[in-house]
Image (cartoon, rainbow, N blue to C red; front, side, top):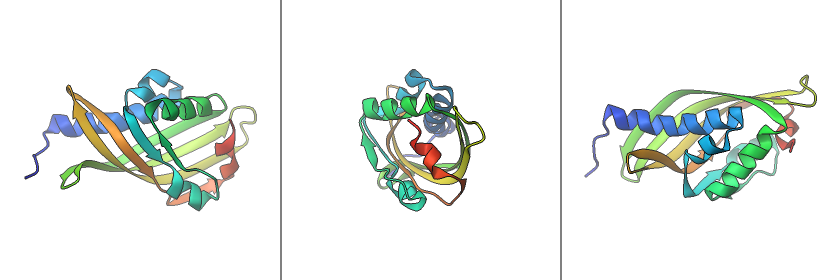
Amino acid sequence: MRNVLSADDRLGARDALLRFATGTDNGDAVLIRSAFTSDAVVDFGPCGEKLGLPFQSIAGSDAIVGFLAGTCKHQITSHVVTNVRVEDTEAGVTMRALVEATHIDRSDQTRRFRMLDPYAANLTKHEGHWWIERLKIDNIWFEGDPQILLCR
């Protein structure tokens, strides 16, 4: 039998996604790390395929933080998170959200890229803190040059 999630649980789970997005936008490695379990996986593959970019999965919080924090050095990003739905399913606690992201090349701010991505996550709660275990990022639409995402 599944547990009923409290309002605090739903907010805490959403906060994990906001820590990821805000940490990325601010280049805050500590905040990014606070969103993910040590063995987390972020799967950029579905999104990368639609954008024609060689993105795959990144495993482990060190690799995830390194990738995202490294990206921040070369891009200005803005993530807007909406339509968040947290559910307790047979597979555990899941979250779906829409995330619109804008990426601007720091060295040439006329180069911009915008996209809307559905996110699907599996989460866990440990010692009162919600963590992302797995995050899959797909893509609905984009505009601009996706090559900006490769600025590293």
